Length: 278
Image 1 (cartoon, rainbow, N blue to C red):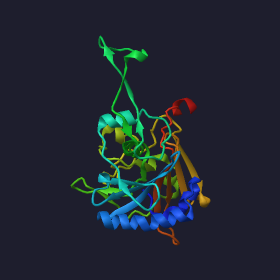
Image 2 (tube, one colour):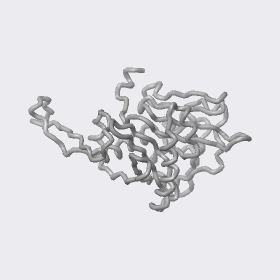
Image 3 (cartoon, rainbow, N blue to C red):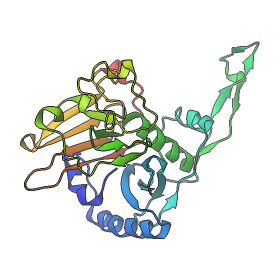
Image 4 (tube, rainbow, N blue to C red):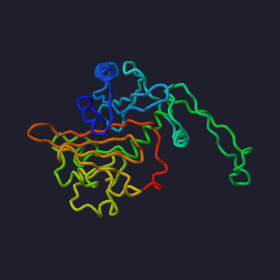
């Protein structure tokens, strides 16, 4: 998630949003929040298309894992993205071409017809599936990026006795040593449970904040690029699995509040050759 007040941190990731788009987003996101009656609205990112780019906003109330997503191609008008099925998500994961920038554009998919309980690879044994339009592809790609690479610093969220996740208002940031350790950053996704396997590499366990899986053991090795910025006062993390995903963290000082956030700004294409490249 990325608040518009923190947009200058995008420069650390090499991303830019021109003045006109920035003004449009500042205004239209506030209007979207009021119109849809959400407590929270933030900029998720931008997916670059051949004809037009998609700006993505995320909205939520009490349950941050119940976020709804909206897209805009002009930074003014926002449309809600549709929900998708698991079968549709699987099909979307097999699309590797560029986004067009036309929400109604349809991707033609093919599946193999099984014969004698075996998949026959000849072209004659391929049949067309129901096409996937670009709106649904956007929904699927956002879901995959969130699951694979959306991260938060350890301690930024906590779990209460009713197992509900909350933002930690008392979180002031990681210290200098913690900032440069991958184990200090967690996948921001629901469903994680502490087990003997997941706690064996954690020295100090706090069940209220150790509620997500850390990224230290993500495979393949080297999947994250960590950089120290501003003389050690800020760190950035970039994903090599989803090029375009960028995270920053700047702990609280006498001059500023604690800051952290993330944004995706890329083609919406997963790097499936990463294992070969590293």
